[in-house]
Length: 344
Image (cartoon, rainbow, N blue to C red; front, side, top):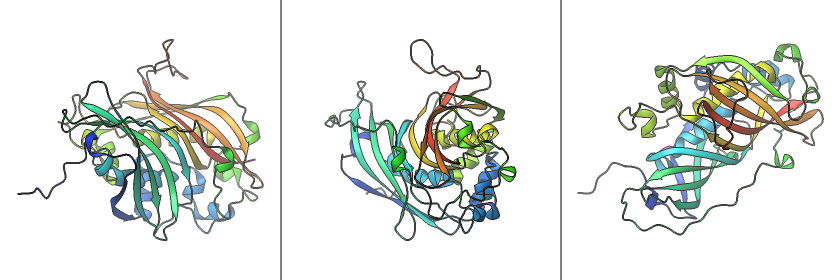
């Protein structure tokens, strides 16, 4: 009798060029916003206050960019990473349209690369995932690659296809939300006086604060984003206990970056990202940033700042990243390269 349940895809089940439409659509509400701000110390004014957002030209505050990311990402897990060993990285991410309360989000992914690992037991799958709203408008697109187990180790290796990915999203390809204006931007309400011109390329910022991750907290986050990957849900699926969802670390680090980057209000590009080492319950996460680039956007008064955001365990020295061998130091958890919009 054919099983009605889904054990998830394994490495040998993917084909380059196939497009996967992911279940289940999700309508977002103020509940997601409240829960997001409860899970993470998120304080950016653009997402906290309708009045602040109206002063910036929008009719209301959109949902945090990373709510959109987590929602789109979570939809893909049953089809892409249910049997994953690890999520390896991101590239070519573009936030295309703000997501508001009441929007219904769908996700689809195209397989753009495959490479079996030398052990013959796992392989790497590259997908380009796109999230869209109820009007069919794309709100987010990004590439990620995942190490996935083989279900049948004797299955032949596919032809190796490794996509050629851009090092970063070009500043000219960043999307400024329709109507956005910083002409009436209130720096006092935003929390800091620093404009784009106050930052210099190469500057490093220690965000000072830390957050200790609790088991219940990260499990609540994983369930909220409907991320059903076994290594996050099932304590028996991995030696050493449940692995913290990498997106949870991203949101923690982004929220911590408020202290020093309060006016980097809107994430518009995701250039690259690596979950350098596993994170577990009980770890205390701290963060620092490095300014990689500063660019014009073509919109008056709105600039773009490119930032490296690093999350690390509290035991690590500030600004730790890699050793002399070029490998990430063991206490580094996240290395994320992104673009954000900021008043000039």
